[in-house]
Amino acid sequence: MLNHRTLLMLLAFLVLQPVIDVMTTASILIFNLNITVGVIIRVLFMVIILLFLLKLAFNHSRARKYILYLIGLAIILIINIVVNMNLKDPYFLFKELKFYNKVVYFPVLFLGFVMIYLQLKKSRTEIMEKTTAYFLYSSIIISVVFIAAYFTGTSLSNYSHTKVGYTGWFFAGNEIGAIMAIILPVTALYAIEKTDSLKNSFYWLPFILLSISMLFLGTKVGYGGIVIVLIAACISLLIIYVTKGREKKTRANMLISLFLLAVLAVSTPFTPVFNNMYAHVNLLGINIEKEKKVDIKKGEAVVEEEKEPKISEEQLQNLVFSSREKYLADYKKDFADAPTIQKVFGLGFAGNYEMPEPGKEPKMIEMDFYDLFFSLGIVGFLYFMAPLIYYSIRFIWYFISNIKETFTIPHVMYGVGFLLAIGIGATAGHVFTAPAVSIYVAAILSMLIVDSKIIE
Image (cartoon, rainbow, N blue to C red; front, top):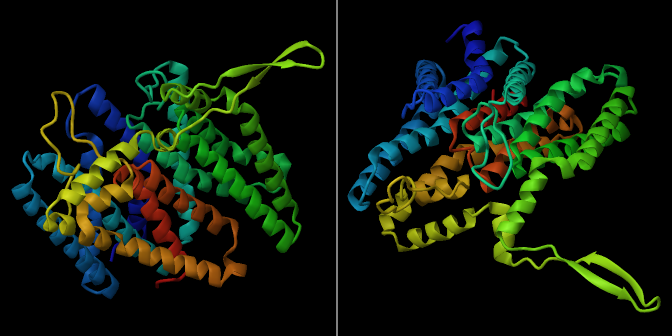
């Protein structure tokens, strides 16, 4: 078993994620590397976690079960590769392997973090407190990067045309947006725990800075994440205030979160996401026209009123899913036409793609659960999802069964972070198929199940 300091160092890898992502941007834009610094460092960390699990498996039955699960997952992926090498033409082996490296990252880190948290808890470490601190440090680094990029005029654009948005020095806008949305509730948790009155509301500063950075992105995920976290904070604080005592601390934080929600509402028309929604509407050919009406009684007074725009179901889906629904329809057709063995073990990366045009690559749907289902097949998808579903259900059952004890701000905020991860993964993707993001989800769920004593 590793010593206490080493275990904390493994967990502290969370803090380095934004630094690694900035290094990845440099690898791509400055050195034009195919295999980036981020890929190398994250693969090495995954190998370390695997070695940790293997070492622990010699004297820990749970670690042995986790190793057996990962061996089973490896066998399924090998079958997938062998099947698709014989059925797909062309078959891009490097792209397929790169995709599966991203896929296995979440289960390996999730099971590894479970064992790390179990060992830390045995040494009486406050695992939730440590996790909150690491998430907070990560959020501060992200905010500093965004602010520095903005004031130096070196921020990367999140969109190539029409829409407005910036990603700081982070190359992947979707991924950094998902990361910020997932860790935002933890910055709110830190603020709520530290703020005793309106006088020391400055503890909300990390939350505010991260929220501003999220608004810079110009995405629905960024804006929606702020709204959801603030509403969740307001409602949960109100419930606690009414049911568990009218404390000054609870009231102060409730007022602050309500104030921030009001500020967000007032500033919305000036945010990039507001502009981008109008741009998207115009691209779809949805025009918000003004209609002139004459007041018959006065015989004059021309009044301009906005017509309610007519939006088709197809246009609405495009507004919500940003063309992902079109790729989904193509994948459904590929899956329906695929041989039975591909339906069972998966179509691999990007489905049964054809030879792409020069400068283009096979494209995923970018809705994680669909991508995983079509790529891994029925058997592979169910096997991949089994630990996630099993432990999620166990925690939800524990939370509901002990609601009087479990309805606390830490549980609610971490729960919101996990639910945001699920929601973003299902609709916008880049969560369970992106190591930079999935590491945070792995940490949240593993910490919750160990902290709640679901497993010991």
